[in-house]
Amino acid sequence: MACFWLKSQETNVKIPTTQERDGVVFYKIQVFIGEISWNIPHRYNDFFELHSKLVSDHGVAKDILPSKKLIRSKCPEFIESRRQGLETYLQKVLKFLKLTMPRVFLEFLDFHIYDIFFLVQSLALKFYSEADVCLS
Image 1: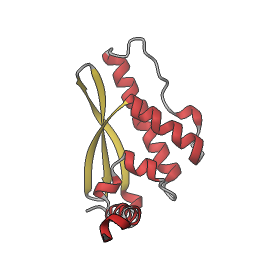
Image 2 (image 1 turned 90 degrees about the vertical axis):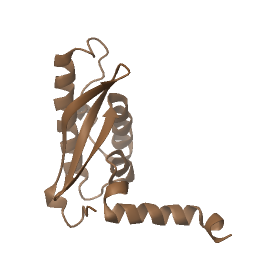
Image 3 (image 1 turned 30 degrees about the vertical axis):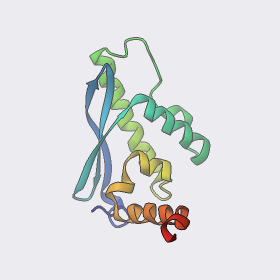
Image 4 (image 1 turned 90 degrees about the horizontal axis):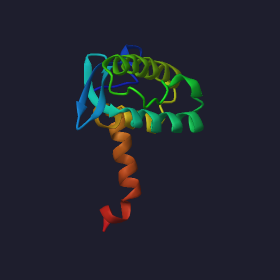
């Protein structure tokens, strides 16, 4: 299990590759916390939704997400350029939000599955919201 709060200085995100499935490009994110790492595939629309929430609720700069262009979106050069832009975006957001780590960002990167603190926090929220069902 990872522990972000103990290894925050050793935390990084990268997007080393992409994968196309059913005509949709997925950007394969690698999250590193110390020696622990995991992968998450996300499509551009997932980044766009995340960015909208982070801009409106957490003060992330509006102009740091690569633009949503539909023309030539399947061109290998465009995909590579966007991959690099999305990697830079995630690194900037991680640096900006490192002290607050909002839930929407944590869940986008699957911290609630792989990081012990956020996993326990998610379980506590689940038990709190479903207490009546659990106790009956």
